[in-house]
Image (cartoon, rainbow, N blue to C red; front, side, top):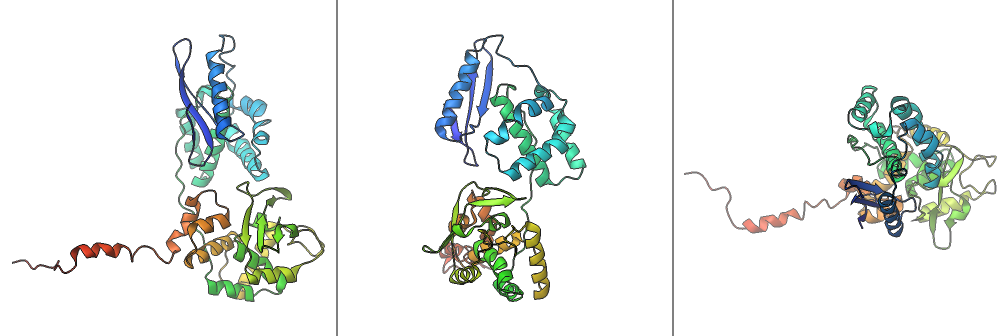
Length: 361
């Protein structure tokens, strides 16, 4: 067995086998139900399919990239994998705008070498950012991986690496945060911004929050879902997470309780708010406060940064943010109060009492 977890924590199998005619093939795959047992089961099935294939069934028809996507992959994979609505939209955009127009007529077994490199070179010539090119690469690789797993392609071709620079972000200091909250026109507007500053919630999570998600007895908030363009789905990580309430936030939420809707944050008529409304509110409050404009998502960065600066462990901040890996939280590590400068001084003990500035004679 060659089953292992990749760097993203997903179970995969990858192994070389020798078929009856003596040829060596490398197979790999990622099970839709992502467990170790399921990966082992799919690996065994994949091996058996190849070892017991007859000349009539050993090779499937080589489809064009377009035919494979439109006839095989798109009707099955996103739904089977449980992709979030936003993920489905992103994949559909990549396929419709970039992948199918440029690679649609290429046969699956010809998607390699010059064809692939030329495609990514063209994306760069079009001025697409590194982040966009990396996301398109991820969609292409997922399609090709399915083609391998389903027996339409022998192996995943080599795709060029796309390096994405660390994204920059802005944040408010504690003093700026207080100034921002003081500039709110009323308690409801103040709570809208305070909630993001005090919980680190993503906008799509805050807009989906219901009163039933607040555990008043145990004093924490449970983030269970997100909403994008009125479509309600799971959180970005697919998991629930709990964030404790400060006394200030608890009191503000208590005072805000209403019967307009089951949603905590909604319009006066009980209808759902949208991202644009959050952005507009934040811009108006920043202007009244005399502060620079920041994005709504920067309130989440502010939450994380202020915790790190106060000495809260990275692992705890990771849990509250809902990051799947500690590497995502490490972007804030430089803000920690103890950077190690006081620890490296132990090296001086080696030279204590010795004069390192011996003059030349």
